[in-house]
Image (cartoon, rainbow, N blue to C red; front, side, top):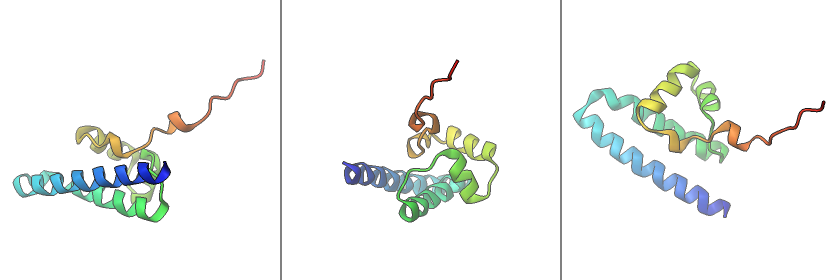
Length: 94
């Protein structure tokens, strides 16, 4: 199951990178998307996990807000895991 998820993730990442490279030829402002996707591939190959936005911002050394804005504006949410979805809810003791 883990291999299947990683293969799907990598295929979607490669597909989106290919499309982004085509967009760059028409619109130079899309260079940042190609940069992010290439770095995501390197990150995934190195750590074998899908990063959160915060982990990725730290990895790149870029401000968290800028990373979030770029992800949101370029519809890259699929390539990041939601931190809150993986943290188990802890019940507060009264």
